[in-house]
Amino acid sequence: MSWNASQYQSHCSYVWQGGESLVDLLAPEPEEQIVDLGCGTGQLTQQIAERCATVTGLDSDRTMIDQARVNYPSSTFPNLTFQVSDAASFQLPNPVDAIFSNAALHWVQPAESAAQCMAAALKPGGRLVAEFGGEGNVSTILTALQNVSGKANLNPWYFPSLTAYATLLEAVGLKVVFAHLFDRPTPLGEAGLAGWLAMFGKRFLPEISSAEDWAHIVSAVEKQVPQLYQAGEWVADYRRLRIVAVKSQA
Ligand code: BEZ
Image (cartoon, rainbow, N blue to C red; front, side, top):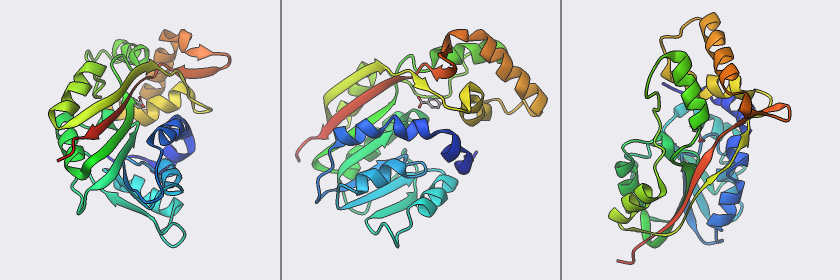
């Protein structure tokens, strides 16, 4: 199922705004070649490109890549390239200095395949700087969605514990040098919880086909989670896993 990239871009700016500090953690160097894995519509890819030699944004969704190319055309951004590629199977012609990934790896399974691809794509000494949903991420929203939809275990995402993910990376030769699991409540902007559910949750409930039934689900979920409505806006209970890992020298 493909994304609605223009809706994503207009309603979900909290995704890349929440990842801006990860670019600082990446600390791109002027001579470096970097991959942005799960680049979406390219906003962070462009920020990275301002600070290094070349960046390739990869995303498995064609509509996201098309939108990224419209946003950042190669005529204006010559060190920026976008390609459709799946994080669980991608291969690069040449290894890179760093892989960056924001809010993407929880969509990718099997996670072991993504880890193997990332390890293969890095130069010896190259680094992975990633942040995505960790254990317990959006648990309040998920519980409500499960209650309301009657679907138990409705968690299509990969939200690992810190230990589980560090173990997985170490198994493919990526040495974890920094790992942090932390709550990051995330304001959902004007589209609110309804917008978040429409963008990220609806795809997992294909049986809800009518707009009326969907509106009923959204309203029932909202009623179950009044604690997420804070100071006049909806705030998602994000919990992030932030990781830096370095590929062993050959
Ligand atoms: C996240 O960024 O944590 C996330 C976004 C959409 C669905 C699930 C998790």
